[in-house]
Image (cartoon, rainbow, N blue to C red; front, side, top):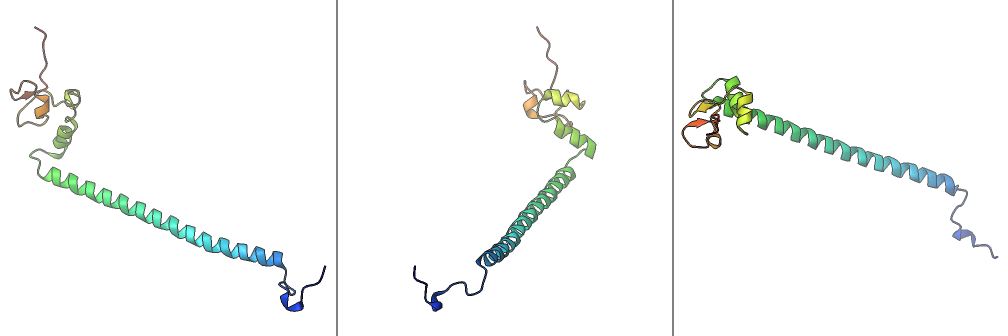
Length: 122
């Protein structure tokens, strides 16, 4: 096999394995910085969304409590009675008349102004 001309030589005194190792190390350093930045951005976005959700829920709670005609604990019990009559009974707000805490229109079956009234079998 003929030898290559001297000017065609690629590795004039350099170690290709060492250069490859050095190049891989540098690429890993760059990609590590990139991935660290991506993780920090995700964490920042998550914290920002959690903060916004906390502030929004606090504001909604504050506004709903400020317009309520009842004290805070009674208002919370009234809201807990919303799903069904068993929940209203669990927080001691059933039966309730129209305008009282614990009265929800969808709990009033016969539309007489009294919700969650006990039914007796005829």
